[in-house]
Amino acid sequence: MSHLLALDPLLRGSVTWSVFVVVVIKVAVAFVILLVSVMLYIWAMRKVIADMQNRIGPNRAGPYGVLQTLADGIKLFFKEQSIPNSADRPVFRLAPYLSIMPAFLMFCVVPIGGTVSILGHQTFLQVVDLPMGALFILAMSGLGVYGVMLAGWSSGSKYPLLGSVRASAQLLSYEAAFGLAILGVLIQAGTLSTHEIVAQQSWTNAWSFVSHWFWLKTFVAFVIFLVAATAETNHPPFDLVEAEQELVGGFNTEYTGIRFAIFYLAEFMNVITMSAIAVTLFLGGPSGPGLGFLARDNVLNVWVMPVVWFVVKVLALLFATVWVRASLPRMRYDRLMSLGWKWLIEIAILWVLVTATVQVAIVEDWNRLVAASIAVGAAVAAYGVLYASMPKSGEQIEEFR
Amino acid sequence: MTEFYRQYLAVAVFVLAAFLMVGAMLGVARLLRPKVPQDEKYITYESGSDPLPLFGQMNVRYYIYALLFVIFDVEAVFIFPWAVNVEGLGWFGLVEMSAFVAVLLLGLAYVWRKGLLRWA
Image 1 (cartoon, rainbow over the protein chains, first blue to last red):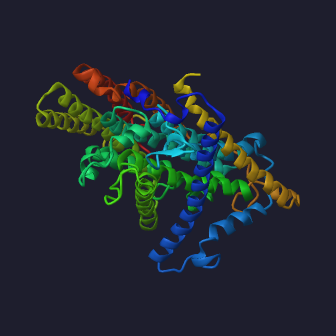
Image 2: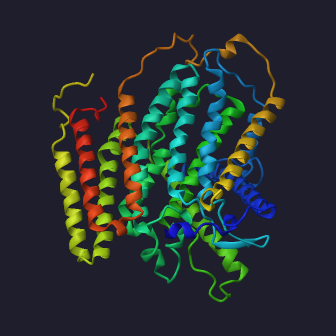
Image 3: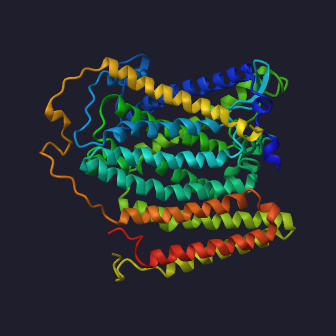
């Protein structure tokens, strides 16, 4: 069991006070990073979209309007709360917690650097390296559905109910494709620990970003992951959860003041953590060239450069999400569902079998090229048969009741 | 407590911290915000008109996806252990998993053929 040996050295021995302090420091830093980055991301998003639409965007609060998000947040603290009479009050109060906790927790397992030493303890630069890290990510993204669903249901109002039922159908559909896309990486990596996954994508030569990072080896899974993650975070073009024109505001229509702010925070935090997870799984996490003219154990190479590479990659993905938000119109609901169920899930699952065949071919010493071509051919044929035997758009079929 | 579970200590601290932070946000807001009750404020929003009684039924189509999801989620439970040990299980595991996926896709094909994945 190789992955059990790679546990975080910090928590390998007994838990002393100084170990506990290190854990608390890591948790506190992760919180600060998350909250500050959400604040900056919302500002940057508004600014970039404004530029793309030839507007000025926020420019009043702070230099270049950078404190705009903070100002909005503070304003919401002072807003009166109204819980509708028809609401289920305990659930209504619980839903914001359910929505934001998974958004926070998902960031736990994301490695943002290599192995460092804090207060004399060797530890990984991530909050925790769970042996089941990939499953933890899936579990948390699954839990996010509860917040959305219960918020809409407990409001006792029509639009939120419609919005939440529709949102849970969307989130569940893409959850399946999301999990199958992660499988592509797991087959390559052979472990569930995020630290191990990143370690296997480490930077060994100038071509590591092609040969070691998983994005090219699992290219189809990478593309499916990006689409599914966009849908999971309710990000445009998949933001049907809060389609203003049809649903007023979606599941959070009845929420006001600070509770609304928490939903808002959770939504953007999800975008950031999802980008971080995409970087971890497919783009090598903190791996990147170090400063060659310094020693390998120099503080810049150990602490700074991995974090810089991680941040650069996450920023690139975040910029792409903003770009998509500015460019694409919202999808129609039926197209959203057929994209998920008729394309992504099938392609993802067949791709899992193709990559597995190649892995097995390497172990069993078969001809890799022949095995890969047979697998791809079989997958395409399987999908073709599936698709060809399906009802055509005009075809009459017995209605389901 | 084994080494395996000790890793979750950090998760527990993280959960506690997140809980406290959200609680603090709600608590501070409770101290700061005004409270001026008026009956109209507690009516649900319905584009400005008086709300009609809440309907009790929801289109069954939404639930189909939830049911289908359960199938694919259970399937993932079976595939994950195999996926992390593909090389160890070799061609035998590959054949087994292909058969499993084929059965699963047959189920999906049935649902599709029955027209449940159509939204109109």
